[in-house]
Length: 278
Figure 1 (cartoon, rainbow, N blue to C red):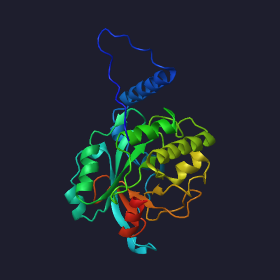
Figure 2 (spheres, one colour):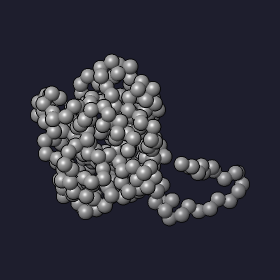
Figure 3 (cartoon, one colour):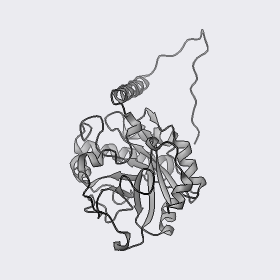
Figure 4 (cartoon, rainbow, N blue to C red):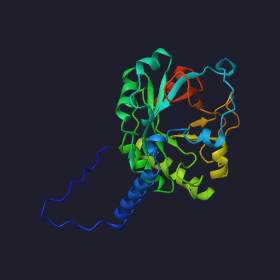
């Protein structure tokens, strides 16, 4: 995909006034940056599930892959919070796949994304990127575009998972970002459709059942198109959001043998490869 590069006008040249859309985009980005400055951890402290334990807790149970009806494949997700990851150590401990945070809203890019995304690939893991959604900041389509332009794309190389949309509790305020349930469903749809337009893949949706019920009214609109990456820190995956008959990935703990969060892909390695290949 070609990305136009905008350069400042040469000294002395007149510059066009920004369009209304450009002004709005600039204001949204400034708003994000101001919000992030007020929260010391900021987006570096917002990873997939960073808000889950705060709102839903942990039940202390330890899941057992042997109890699953199908083979489980072990993986992890990381963000800038983990900084440079020891991918050789991940492989030694049996890691087969990884999701890496790329972006948040339209104003943040993970500064460790290159080391994490390329490093996992170089060590043989199947990996993908994820986007931390801020639905009150800009449209779903705008955030999908920002994500794809900054590490969230997909290629059919057998090693790249479809990008993931991390949609969870708002770390900056209102749980549902001030959106109604119908508006939230539309925002997610806009993101999903735009990501599909840009990459030919529908994004994986990362969420928790509790948040999904509260903020989308337990919408069943995405179960037929988007893989489900479910967050629940428990000994069992529990109830699924409406529309999904099964989960694709389960984030079952926020600490363990790998850096970052601990995940199981719900299937054997060849099914993980099938997800990567589309």
